[in-house]
Amino acid sequence: MKGKGIQVLTHFMGCAVFLSLPILFSPDLTNPFGMYKIPPFQRDFIGYVILVLFFYLNYYTLIPKFYFQKKYAVFSALTLLCFLLVSIIPNLLISEADFINYPQNTYPEVNPNFSPPPTPSFFFHFFGHHFFEFLIVFTLSLMLKISSRLKLAEKEKVNAELSYLKAQINPHFLFNTLNSIYSLAIEKSDYTATAVVKLSGMMRYVITDASHKFVPLEKEINYISDYIELQKLRIDSTIKLTYVVTGDAFDKKIAPLVLISFIENAFKYGVNAEENSEIKIDIDITKSYLHLRVFNKKVSIHQVNEAKSGLGIENTKNRLQLLYPGSHKLVIKDNKDQFSILLSLHLI
Image (cartoon, rainbow, N blue to C red):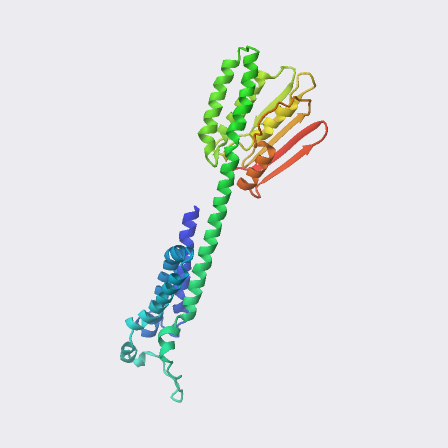
């Protein structure tokens, strides 16, 4: 069941439980089928129905439009007006005449020596009967709305952070890939046109699909495969590169571009034709998990003066914390000669 359906069911069950209270605590519970004819029960039940209406009026209108807008005087006045209506309407609908005219022999016999309690004051009769129920409903609606607002604010904050992190991906990706194609063009490689076609397809994925929170895992794997093929065009054939994908990616989804920075890092710090270079990339897909293993030997590299991309592994670690809280595990091993990562995350 989706979140909205669960919310509707929760509200329905909450209202049902609340409206059952005047039934459960009625002294006429021994006569359930005739209870609805008894004026005291009718008055109490009407009061509870009005309290339910006040809950939703307060939750959806009064709190958002007045309390959250800091119009406290108007909010207090309207709340007081609602309390007066909750207190008076049941007494207007079920008057004292209904109590007097109701046949007394329907009640069980009582002890003739029993002295009835004193008649309540006018104030308590009209305003005190539902005071505590009103206070509980008012407090509950206020707490739930504040809690909902805090959750929404947190969600908006997370979405803003994700948008910021994702906005850094496009220039980073484009810069690195254009550098690769530039190297091919300098060498007048026959693979330059192929590289441009692959870049076009990859950019289409980054611009269209990667704008979503989650994408089909098949597309993400294809994007990674194209990236590795593009890197193969520029690296020396003597460099040992292993890329293996196992498992079924069908009907699974993943956050876009959450794996690529680890693979980019391997090519950035693990490729040098003059040294013993080695890169291993292994993606294993099980029923509900994806395991990514990336290994590279560290080599000497030329640092070119370039603008900070801002993506990197730290960026990806932040995205993983936001998108997969408690459902991923990242192990990074960084020593003098080797660098490796092991990422396991729960797929949806």
